[in-house]
Image 1 (spheres, rainbow, N blue to C red):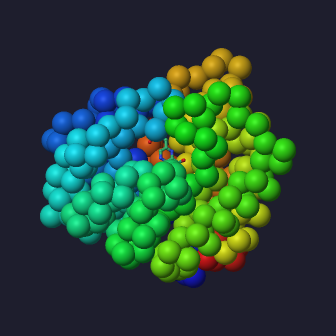
Image 2 (cartoon, rainbow, N blue to C red; image 1 turned 135 degrees about the vertical axis):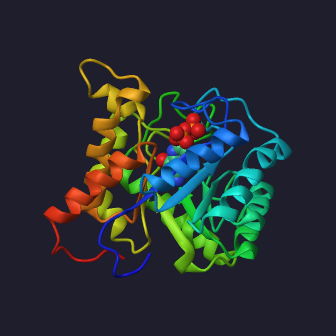
Length: 276
Ligand code: HH2
């Protein structure tokens, strides 16, 4: 992140998975994955986040070599056509390593470098930026009655501890991002408390990533209910709240609409302080 940045960057989501919660199966073959990625770039994405394994509860775990086979050809093809920053959404060091060799520069780890013993060392060795996200428990069971005494304090303490652990392993402090992990072991109330507390997380001094796109807490607030494809309004509202709090980036499926919403927000508040 640079000091001159005035609005959050848009991280477009490219899921090359058969079972992601909102777009599983749509972009699994290499041509449609690349077509989707190019579309997101045209729509205004600043970063692309490429994932080959769904983290939704009940998703089938993916073998390392299969995950690499899903994401690496896409990263290589993209790298040949565009210099957009690419992030790899994986919990596996070997996948991060292969993705960085193919041209990714950010490792987005929803496990915050906890699920593999060598994760922090590999992140340090790769020298890439690292997103450390909060998740309570494991993906398969994280939504089974998540409970906290004080969700904001606990998520904040977790993220700070993970950042210190990454630094101790050799990751440069200025390459670390934090993410409260909307929907990862949280009730709708927990998610809302964390979104409301984003200024406190931003004040920790690390770039903050917010990923609220199409998540289930939005349906919980909609008296009509809403399938994932019907959660754009709620996604934009949450991401604009993040923008006001000073987050560095928002992770979105609907890149064009998100970029447009942020452009209007940016034009309405042109004189606010620049983000870190
Ligand atoms: N959310 C998802 C996946 N990765 N990474 C970060 N840093 N923050 C998030 O909030 C986040 C994330 C879940 O969304 P999606 O990729 O659409 O679904 P799935 O995990 O089913 O592929």
